[in-house]
Length: 315
Length: 240
Image (cartoon, rainbow over the protein chains, first blue to last red):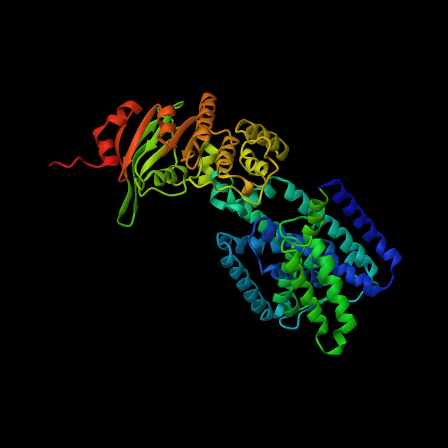
């Protein structure tokens, strides 16, 4: 990363850390928490969808698995301090099982397989009455740091902030490691990568499982933050697409891209919804769609290219 | 014992026999060329040796280890590397990153792989293009990159599939020198080549494939005089 890039990033981290101290309004805090969450989900998705080039529409499944694991464990009085990491492990385990047959597919076929995974999981959970069935699960209302349950929203901001920093550092380190090079090589030409000694099956699985684990961890956070989860809100195609959209609009296969995508889309979605959502005219969704169209038209490689282009013009 | 030992290798595609009972050996330190008309089965043979295709029957041994049934990545790990006839660079990555993917096979970390990649790029004459996108290279550049990537894996035996195709005469001469240098550092070479200039200058031994079968083998001088070779390339003299 360039020196200016690192400076901008450091500034963003400082601003985000100072934000709840300056802005007390819970609405704005909520928007930033969602922004951090979608940025992180996009960054996690990007390991598979960007670096490895396997587009997954099934990431809501991993989010839902993390959320359900955390709340089901909480029901048996297991703290989310443990439940959230376990949720990540459950998501990774399911990714491992699902990845074995599906990761050999590429292009549209892998995408279709992940759509099927989403549909199947939704049906299974709806019919699983022990896990709440179609009604879903609720977190108890309490004020207990050990159970990560708070009446105020502020502590959740800090949890999201720390998790987002962790996600950023993890994806950055992975992209810079041997795995990052191997993923991009497999994406470029799998047969050529194999002929250079890249154990492609193992590295594809690694990307999928790590991506699922990070997504599952955020699912755990989401469940205690919202305090409620049901099959429709967890195993939801719109949610899956939102994750893909954030990553693609920001810049697929880049470290910073998904965070930029979330920084544009989430405030825009929330802002237009608050300003115009009640009018019944659907104008908020029109504006949201317009923004997506404009970015795809003028910055087809994502928001990250904005910086690159300006840099190129100056030189 | 031969470094590469191919026995009775046959590859059928339905009714088409691309390779029939091909048997040959390559000793460590040799440069062997495989020539033959289009469709003679040269690339199929390479695919079978490097694990991209499985022979219908027969055996391929490299340094005593049976290769049939192994994956391409397992074969690469043993030190048998191949290049592709049509360069298959990772177009979205930089030239140096392409070579690093190869270097990571033996180098202990990303930093060491980057150093090795720069060294190899210098050696193949791409030292100043390391930061360019691989997709932006010319055909000659792509061919060199293809070579650099496999060299960065510290190979023992290289299968080179038409590395001189599409190069102009100057580039071809440079390539011949480069291959001599690689060979001088102890790498065994097996080349499939249409450009006879390269073959005649480099090869210690030539194998001739026609309709999937080996029809001749010997020194370059012997092979060009071999009646079966002349017939395969020029056809039979018609009797009046």
